[in-house]
Image (cartoon, rainbow, N blue to C red):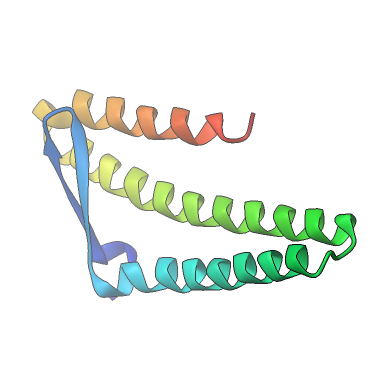
Length: 111
C-alpha cells in the first residue's frame, strides 16, 4: 500500500481535514527529525562562533528541507482534494477552494 493511499480526508466546514495512516506520516516525521538535528547543529555553530557563511549555508539547507516537508504535505492535500472533488459534486467547490487556499499559503513563504 502506498503512503498516498494511507491519506484520507473529509470536508469539515470549508476545509479538508486529512487523516494520515502511519505509512503516510513516517516520511514526514523522518524528515522533521533530520531537520531537528540540523537545527541543533546550527545552534552549536552559533555557540562556537563559526564562520557566518557556514551558518548561513546551514540556514539555507534548513529552509530547503522545510520546503520539502511543505511540498509533501501539499501533495497529500491536493491528492485528497482532487479525490473529494471528483467523488462528490456537492463538495467540489469546497475542495477546490481549500486546495487553492493551501497553495496560496505555500506560495507566500517563497516571497
